[in-house]
Length: 363
Image 1 (spheres, rainbow, N blue to C red):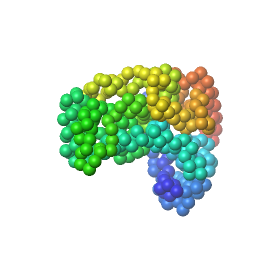
Image 2 (cartoon, one colour):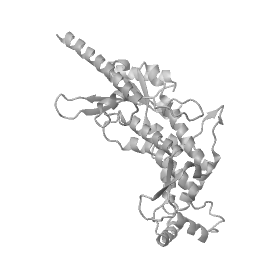
Image 3 (cartoon, rainbow, N blue to C red):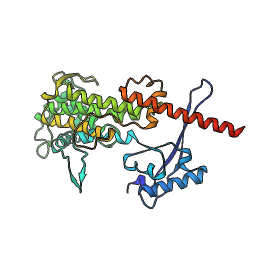
Image 4 (cartoon, helix red, strand yellow):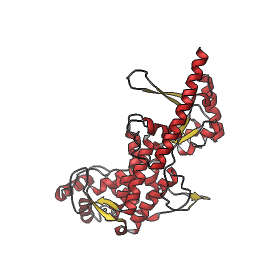
C-alpha cells in the first residue's frame, strides 16, 4: 500500500457565503494523518469516519457532499458512504504526457498491454542529453559558447527530478528544443569526449513532434496547480481544453517548434504541419495522449478513441453554472449545458427545502 493509504490525510474544506457583497471565504481544516493498519478502501473509510466523529461530532455523510482523492483512492468515497467522488486533477493531469511517451503503460498480469518503446527511447535520449550538462560547469560553458554562435538561448537543460504534477516531461524536451543547433555543434565537436561516445544525439523534428503533444498535455497539470481562485468548475474547462486541442491536432494541424528559426526568446516559433506529415512515432504519441485522456476523463474503457464527452460530477455541473467565469457555458456542448442546468435546479430545490425545514425547526 502507498504512504497515502498507510497514513491517509483527511482535510475538510468549506466555503462560507457572505450575505453582504463581500466575497465568499474558503477554508480548509486538516483532520487526519493517523496510521492505518490496512490500505483497503473499506479500512481507510472506517478510519476517516472515526476521526470525523471524534473531532467534529458528525459522520462524514452528514457534513460531506463529495470526496476528492487521487485515482488510486477513488473507491474510498463509496466505502465511506459519500454520495460522490472526484479524482484530483493535480495528481491525474501529468499521466497524459507520461502515457503519450510510453513512460506510463497499462498492464495485465504484470505484462504491458500498450508498450511504446520508441517513445521511451526518445525520452531516454533527452534525459541523457540533459544529464550530460548537469555536472559541473565545463560542459555547460562550452555549450553556451555554441549558443552565442547559433543565436540560441544559453540555458541549462531541465533534468527530471520530480516526475509528477510539474509537467516535467514537457519541460525536459522543450528546454532542448531551445538550442538544437548548439547541441548539434557540441555533439560534433566532442563526439569522443572523455570515455567514448556522448550517449545522446541532438534533438530533431521527432523531438519537436513529441514536444507539440506534451505542450498540450502539460496544461492538465500546469493549470491545475496555478489556479488560485475557486476552481470547482475548472477541471472541466482544463480537460475540455486539453482534449479539444489533441483532437484538433489529430484532425487538423499540429503546431511544432520550427527548428529552422533559432531564437533566444522563451516562446519558440512554431509552424503547422498535418498529422500525416508526422513520423510514425509522433503519430503514436499523439494518439496515445488522446486515448489516455478519454480513458481517464470520459469513461472510455476501450482501446480505441471514440470522441466521448468528459464525465462531470454533480458538483462540477453546479459549479459550472454558479461560477461567473463559466456560467455562460462556452466550454460545454449543448447536452452538457442542459445537464448542468438540470442538476443546478435539483440542487437548488433541495437547498430551499432544507433551509425551509431548518427555519421551521427554529420557529
